[in-house]
Each structure stands twice: as structure tokens, then as C-alpha cells.
Length: 294
Image (cartoon, rainbow, N blue to C red; front, top):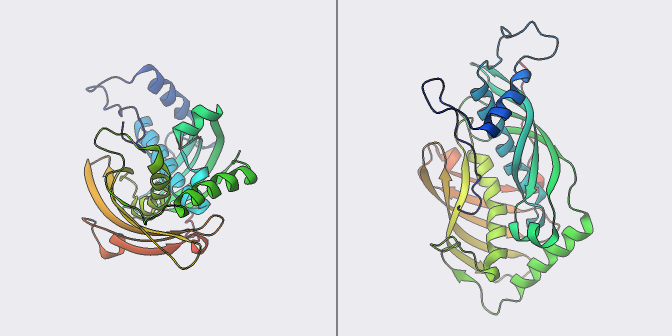
């Protein structure tokens, strides 16, 4: 499995297609009661998706988008999270406005080596409200997560990564992380984690209601010597879009210092509009778009 890629059960295509597996069936049964809001008149409420498969896909898409946003805003390679399981949620669809999703989900630490070494399991729950503006990118997100890694431990891990990169005798210049066999050399793990951090911003920016991206590979990395204390590097990543199986190359410039907002500038090929393809952002400057009520 490529690093950063999530294993997701195949969607049930209906009576004429494959039947859901037992875990998927259990998830569908769990989600089915939340299609209609409490106190409502039942399945005829406007805006509520009546198909459990549609609801399941919307909840997963919203959870993934919320985690991209959360990871970027956290600005720390030590607190990166990935989706473990969608637990509950509900969605409203308005053809003129878009889709609003409330979702609760559990997460895991991104770095699997940390899980093995420290015996850490899932990192608690996140709850999010996500608004997809029709098929436009950059969903508006409000997200809150519990059981964050304690501040002192995060600072220690971030500083260790920072120190490793600052002690490089020469500016780093390398290609292909992971290699063609899916292996990441331990010495390159800090570069991959920082790339995942910066790519989280890009993936949030270009995500839509139906597009799901994950970081597949770094094809070039170049670290720059700086006159200040920051880590400054350029890299090219390949983002894999799940629904179309497209590979999108993106050039990303990241400036990072532990405890400071992450600065990201990027340009992606093969996206539809210039607005989608390029952007510059700093972590502290990001404010969620006002959520529409409908």
C-alpha cells in the first residue's frame, strides 16, 4: 500500500452489484438511522440523502477533508492524523448551495512506526462540519479533535526532526520517496512527514465533494540553506485522485519552524482553473469560510 493511502471498502453498487462485506454492512446499518434528523417526519425530509451508500461516501469525504485541514492548521509533523473510522453523521444537500455534512470520526497517528514503538492506539474523536460548495474546491471546515498529543511531547518530537534536518552537512537534494518498492529510508522519514504536512494544505485546497486525493510519492526534493532558523525546501509530489485514478503533479514550497505557522506555496498541473492550480497560504492566516445554513 502506498504511504498516505487509506484502505476503504468498495462502495456497494446496489442489488445488481457486489454485496457489502460484513464490516461494511455493519457500518451501513449504523449510519442508516441518522439519515433523518431527530424529530423529523421521516424519510421524506427534503435535502436528506435516502441512500445509505451515498451518505456513507459523503461522510467519509467530509472526514478526509476535515483531516487535511486539521493537519495543516496544526503545523506539526508530530500530530499528523489519518482517518480510522467514521462513527456517525448526517448530510444535507441543496442543489443551489451545495452539501453540508456533520460528521464524527476516530483517527490514528500518521506515522506507523510511532504506533509500534509507543503502543499508541487511536487518538480519540474528531467532530467536523464541512460545507462543499457544489463542485468547487476548498470546502469550508470547522473541526475539533480530542486527545491531542501533549504539548511537551509534540515540542520534543518536532525539535528532534528540526535538529536532524539542520544538521545535514549539505542541502538535501534527492528523488523518489518512497522508492519504487514503497520503502522510505529512516533518514528520509522527516522529509516525507514535512511533505505530508505541506501536502495536507494542497489536498484540502483542491478537494471537492467527489474528489479525494492522497499523497503517493515525492519525485524531487530540494532543501535550501537559509539565513534564519527556518527549514525551507521545494518538492514535487504526485497526488493520486481516487475516483478518477489520475496522478496530479504538484510543485510545493514549504517554510517551517517548530511552533510557528506553516507557510505553503504551490502549483498543480492538470487542474481545471488557475484558482485551483496555484495558491499561497500561511497557517495562522487561514479562516474557515462562513458556513451556509439551508
